[in-house]
Image 1 (cartoon, chains in turn yellow, blue, purple):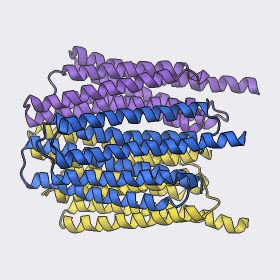
Image 2: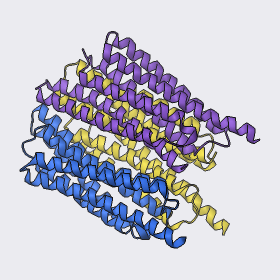
Image 3: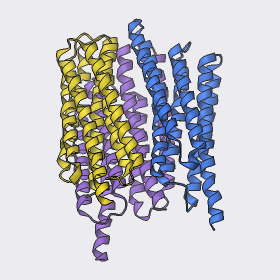
Image 4: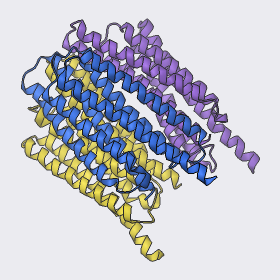
Length: 205
Length: 205
Length: 205
């Protein structure tokens, strides 16, 4: 019996990594979209497909959760982790879509910088999840993701202050505040996921 | 002893249903207010009373929680559920009140559509809670509430994009973005409550 | 053994009180900044240092958590409490910084009122944490913090409605809505922390 259960548990870890790899893929698509901005509509559509893929993975984890007796850690924590990853991807997709909806001509350097922070955070989340099995040495990921959140915060604040300082039209201020806010929201959500991973590590310490 | 404890536990389920019925009542009042918009101030005041009623129910559940030794499920989950229902009603009331504070002449079709989504979600939450006793067959509610959240998301995005596309005055853009955001917030909060119910169901699976 | 463990547990309670005292200090600095508004940049910088001090305290609690076998209550709840206190201070600092970033000439009476509510809530959180050892008689703090959140809500709604009623420039509406929203965010976060304290009290009831 035990021999059969262990592989089933292991499968969860693989699925978390798969989920995080998909989120990372989404983050990289967003950054590429903002950097090139050649076919933004097509790139935003691609992101929509990645988000859909994320829903499939979440659904598969949920299904396995309902049919598995022993899980590697609390069902609640698994729930928190997959819904956190889901939230990151939702925000990435929403940010990309907002560029289209608002007919943005060209991304600002600050928005591209924010996207870079998101990619770096998603890389760290992905890496942390590949090491989750041991429940060890995860704190450095948490610290670095937290530091990136602080950096993102500085970028966002400067970007928003810049909108007012350069006497932009009110309509443009509204649009860009929204976009900076969505990208900042992704960055914060990455920190939330890092906190969940840290919480899991603390429980199993 | 056991005979006495069971009815006390059962009372919790009744109270959740009562709480959700009150939230549903609030959602229906909001939709009616936006559809007719004949006496919006009176209707917003009515909603304020419903919100107050919700506080009373939450308070009664909290009190019972403190004097009951055995509860049907974790105290924390009860806490999460009642505070989630509370949040939905708070946002419904705030959305209605914002129409008054901002002196809105007439609700847009998009806002009415959003209110319709909220009503549908609250109906499903109410129905799910009537079936919570069994901890079974709750997943379809969660799936449908999640689907409605996606639908609400599409309505909101199109509504906000429309504000910019039709060259509205900045002040009107600010007002309507707020209102669409509050209604979207209700829709998201309904999904959060569905997630809590799902989490409870998973724990007891 | 037991003799040694008890003092180690007690140290946690002291650290929560220290953390809350630092948050309260931050709240008082914010209120003083808005009331006098003589050297806002210097005062905002002071708040930045207080936020950094808060990070140090959180870090120390986290470190102790990882090396302590027995804790006074769930590790998760300790985690929730310190990250909640952290969030309050982050928002206080962000609100103060926004006055500088937006080149605000003079705080409105409503913003000063909001800061007063935050101070009162932080006083109550601090006091509740000094009494946490007993896990008793904490409900009155929760009720009062909740009441203050309702009061803050009324202040914020009236302030925002006032922005539109007095025909302010769109850019000023955008700036002040942000500031009122950040201060309101602090008030809400104080209520969240009160809910965590209440949850801990319920668990140990």
